[in-house]
Image: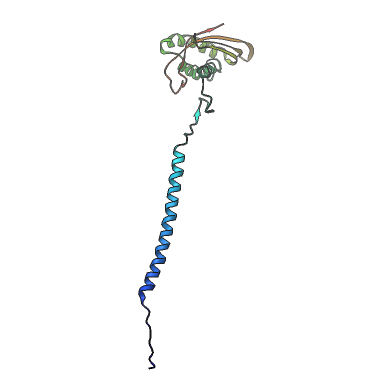
Length: 194
């Protein structure tokens, strides 16, 4: 009775074991991927509910603080400073460009009178080689009456001879269309030097 029995192992359990092991690996990978997807959705939801960060710049490319929006008085002050810079600061070489830039602050209905007055100033400045600089010290703006009183110093040089004097200008302004050249939309209606 000496019989040898050779047991042959079936391939099926090994295949099932390998498949179970592979299946566990896929289940683990799927759970990990699901966790990452849920975390990404939560982060996206939180970020979409945050308020947007808005950077606002003024006309000089300075960042405005979010809590402090520019007031009407600040806007008018900036516009009048630009007007004074073009109107009262020039040399014989750049007077034409500066006075042309000043016309961006004049309403079309007042431009004829302004052009007439400025042509005489330009003629005098070119004949006498006049150089002029204005330095604003104080600006009183009355928004109710749409007027501004600007005081400061004016330094003029006629053919190399320098003289300093007081600058006192009464400006009457009104709001109008905003343009690239006049982003404030402030236009000078009347100008009176005292």
